[in-house]
Length: 302
Image (cartoon, rainbow, N blue to C red; front, side):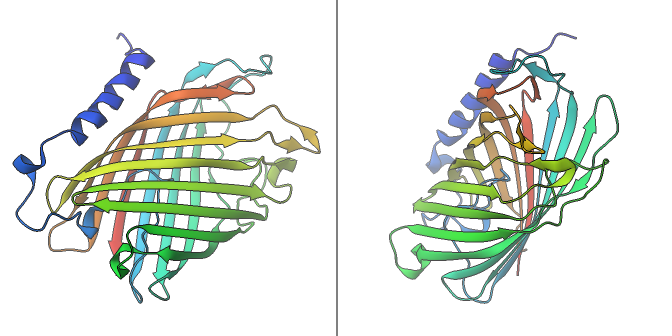
């Protein structure tokens, strides 16, 4: 079977996202106010959050998953003599949020990664749990013109340890978050910035490099229960170290593509699905990458 070229697939996903955003509102919007419904504001991408917080006393439980089939070999910029390993990776995230006040949320994320290489043993692992607070400096529902929030989390060494687990886990770290959300009628814009800084050596004597980046989501409410949008993530990871020796495993990735969010009528349940293709990729060493990735979300509000 003939494979779809990466450039073709990338272009199709990008144009699909733009086409969805261009659909006429008048023909598809359900009756009601010209306002983006709160029930369909959840993005599909696992890295996107935004600056909107919940009202005091409310909670949110989210299961987020990202499927990445890494069977596309890319040559390293600085090291080409290493053997890259094709693999399938599924990142599972349990996200918990509770609004202690109208402007302060308690947040936590528990990760579990399924890592199945084409050769060698599987390295399915618990990741390092992060927990902290997010403060909303401005919130639209409180009368402000925009949502702006910032937060800090502690990354705790809960990651799996041993030869059958992914390198670098089980280490203390710090995470800093900044999110912005702006709603204009039935259109919504979300942007995030983040920095995750591991503070010590983790599993397999690996000290991960700092990871930082930004996100975007441009979404449109077709009805009171369905939103379409274009989502994307640009991120960079610095070089790590193994036993104090620098690894040339730095990387920069930019993935983007269309997403759908559906609020189940009569419930507090929200479902989302997105597909993303690479716009730009650069790796310090030979790396197996994915020509398309899929993210999904199940969220329940309390």
